[in-house]
Length: 366
Ligand SMILES: *Cc1c(COP(=O)(O)O)cnc(C)c1O
Image 1 (cartoon, rainbow, N blue to C red):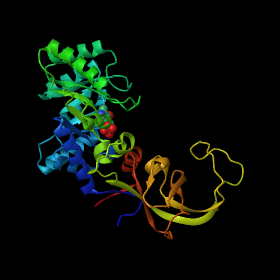
Image 2: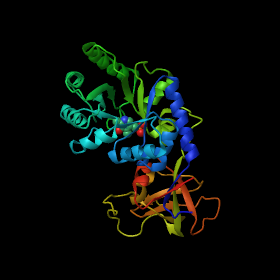
Image 3: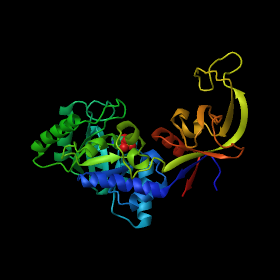
Image 4: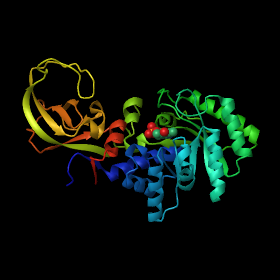
């Protein structure tokens, strides 16, 4: 057994999640771009996405996509495309063209560079033009500007293929994906289609937060590509925020395991003058008298946000954390906790990203 702290990946659960989301998308004639960035491009995750037949495998980072390509090659699989879902950096144009079949774009300057590079290496690179419908992260905010960009790609940038348009919601502005927003995207697409005299292949309406529309049956037909990460890796956002019951999906394909290094009865209110903690923050403390507390070897450096960890065992509550320690209350545990015991926590998207990206957190695959 591997030392803690470690993330345990349950491959069967991940496979089931992928099949479940793929089934939902395909039954609605929506193509699926599986997003692996939430698990930091773990090789086994990439391999499973490929084996399960996810048709487009995508990430925000070239380093992940390069690995997807390598693994696909080693597996002898060519049944998928790769897609970069963060707007390309000017300094990675050559890698975008050589490792990504598709990229999401919002800058004409970058598109011209992509075209030049694709021409140089004799390839046609596919692009999806992003429109910002109010979430205020990436995409053209001025619709006219975005449309003229699409027209330049179509008419002048011969080594680019205008594959479609897309939008991203629910990230910065936390804007909900609604039928209205999707209709806004469709209206833009129709304007472009009228000008270029052909249909766009893909209208990409969003990520996990777009799934409820599919499940409700309210997703307009023309939205035919979703870029899904969280719902395939954890399926937690959907269950908790949207109330949809996806009974075949597991929220614990990834779990974090940490070892107990101290168990003591302690006061619950700090003793002395309270200042700022090691991260420069001031806390409030509730005096609950003496309680049984335990320390875990693993802290914010390993998973980022203690309040976003979900203890699996009953009677375990997270009290707080510093960079390398987690303090838990174990007064209400039914069994007697021992030094050296390993406790399991379910993850949220944030703690999954941090823990799989942390150099000191091991990965155990079961
Ligand atoms: C991360 C990301 C996604 C996937 O989001 P999930 O909420 O994990 O499904 C989709 N599109 C873009 C542009 C992203 O950056």
